[in-house]
Length: 619
Image (tube, rainbow, N blue to C red; front, side, top):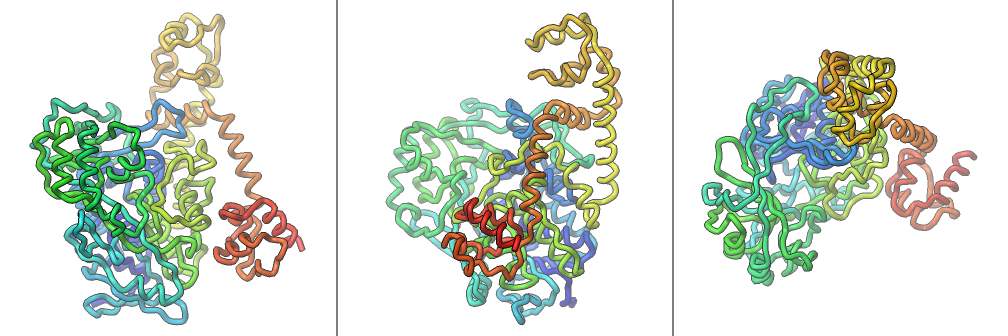
């Protein structure tokens, strides 16, 4: 049996799968260790990918050559582009997925990826010598050696499942918890803490009265996540919407005395932006109803995910409350909702590469770093896998800036600010939202990934064609003019003011509420755009419409670049600089920022502290 590898990945969730694929595709010999080969890439919570800001992350993963976008496209049962009523910086793709097909396609991708080996087992200990990891020891007592190790343990480290007054060990319902790693890392100087997440009951779709709930259909145009030509469904499945009510809330309250959250049996903090139903009732007592989404688990199953009803209340209370919801009066469930509590390691203990500061060649990715969500986990896995490979080859670390990707924002937030609750990505966390759109993820990241050997030539060629198409479209629109007689009926239909003389298409496209699709109703414009794809037309339109805003953001990025280029030595002795505030000295010493720009984003480090550091760097 092989026992020497370049990279060992512990855990085969979304982070572990992306880490293994990235390292292997870069040329590393990879071993992926998972407790159960049947549960690779499980969608443990809702069967969906993307959403606000998360959709941008999936597109970024795809632009770099990761697999999440392709697998999501090929297993989707519904597609929606969220926030279409807002500007394009806010547009976020989201897919509803077939849970079983998603996992199957991920496994097939990994099995067809050269350099990936698999081992079904649990890792109980790391092999550490001279503050560097050299491999792992499994529950079977087998030693595997490697140059780098990536831990993507999800909710499994000392996981405890809570349902009412019952609690038992587990990393996911029906699967045992992982023990040993937390204790070993704490002995090696790491700080660990507890977080909590939860999931709703799974419902038998045959027991739902769909005539009483509101239908939610997918978009007529399926864009998807991948910049490649992926297989997409011809038809889509519907989702539905229903609501809780005061009767539901009163029934749920009867179980609060047996709730692990209210009784104090759960120590970990839960996700702020995805609270349990009991959390919602407590925190939003003024609301008489809460929205619930009835989401199918796949093409060929009756199992339903009730999004918005995450709970750890006793089973009898869950069922009684569900029967008071419109459309669920005769509901049957496959399993109750539950909460799970698990260990995580505050991410201020990591470098931007996701390598730990205390132990060399050891990388952490996913929920072990305090994040929540498949997308946040997957992008960390991608970056950790890339850098685990780079470590093996003694190559430069791969780090994304905040101005380059939502992935860069996420990792920078985690490293500098840490988190004491499950971290979720939002568009509001990014200061350069106009630069970090979902439609230009390939423009931002594909060449960068190609240069390190991850993104393939096929992606680079598509990117070059897209850039060329944008230039051609922009030039055509800047040269060609439309006559009032031809364009005024179209403008009138769009409630836009009419023109009295010929006007360039490039000027008309700048108008609010006017798109290339609208202008294509003109024979002249449709002739000009006939040879371009919808994707390229949309990208060109966005770049033209928002050029002024994009230029302003680029200017801001350039101004901030001065601070980002000021490297702070690792040996910098902050405690000796008494003109720094006490909090700044304490946090700078703990986090050891790589650059002055990073230092400025640490909570508690003030602009005056940065000025002091500038003076010392000057000296």
